[in-house]
Length: 292
Image 1 (spheres, rainbow, N blue to C red):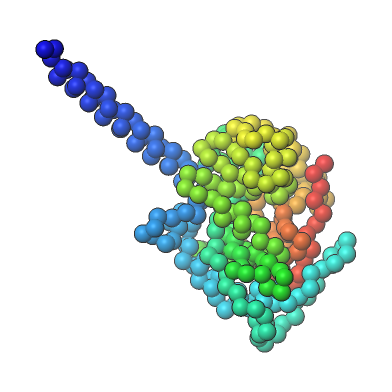
Image 2 (tube, rainbow, N blue to C red; image 1 turned 90 degrees about the vertical axis):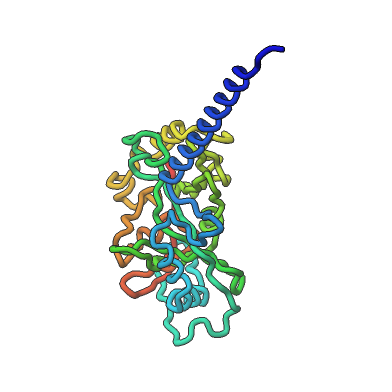
């Protein structure tokens, strides 16, 4: 009878090496995606997403009475109408939520956007260079008087999060909330495009993104960078396109000021946003988007 001990030993060593290799590849992919940007999904034993900094502060912010009152004031104020959409003061009332349907503000999720360096083509097409966490967004648990809204949080200098805006509509929170383990969801604000990034493959999530990819079902991160450079190389912050006020969202906010800027809040907006600046609030209509 042939001696099979050598064959079995070789098979066991090969299986062991394959198992170790598979584990190493899985860990490498996980590390790459973690570095690329926040993924909202968290282990069941840890209800807080550890990859979003100061997430407890973000939860405290969206659950606070001040933020809720601001949302109610927004929902009570008619949206601007007309082509110009001039700034509109938000009335201050003692009990802004009185008489409105009961609603809650959902837990915030990460809003990632493309980075200027990636758009300019001055950095390698890697997930860690392509997207960056810019804000957190939360939607409401229900429509209120037929309207939906998104609560936007910006990072506070020194740590934590603060209310930056309340925006009409909830598409930002809906798309951002589609991130799952092993993926990063991000926005190309200039065209209101939403994408999913898995390792180095970019997949469109809405019609604007599909149009942005020329109808392709997916592209490599390298090819996506080339598309961005061809679209925005002459439209980056500081360009004539930007300084003349045509831009509407491809540049990133600094995310360090306690009083957010109205430019940040208007960038890539829905129909209107309540801008919170220096303790004051005004309702602002977004600027017209130019893509040429």
